[in-house]
Length: 167
Image (cartoon, rainbow, N blue to C red):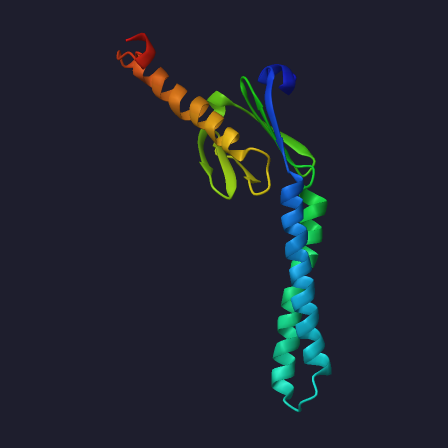
């Protein structure tokens, strides 16, 4: 069965925003400036303290990893997205889609990373920083996975739920 048909109508689409990319570029520039400065002082420092210059050069190289990792992040993560549908969620990461229907989700954890665990034990993780409207994703997951599951288990056990507006 086609995953788009299975998921139903698209409700919302969440992708990395320009703000998220801007923050990553600032982090890269910071690493480049500090790393380049420390490396330059370590190599061209005028004193005879060789161990100090070596340590400074190594620190500079560590800070230069920030721009390298930033370029990698920009190349790998700029097309990542989360799509919320009426029957499930699709996570597009690293060029592939992972589709989960609401009833296939066992649990989720939302913080800096959204981690969704399916009932078959596989997990999907997705960076939430820089994503457009991440609170909408968490709210929909809470509604579909937590609240709907509680209402279904309440009906199965014989209890009923009455909304405050109908009282």
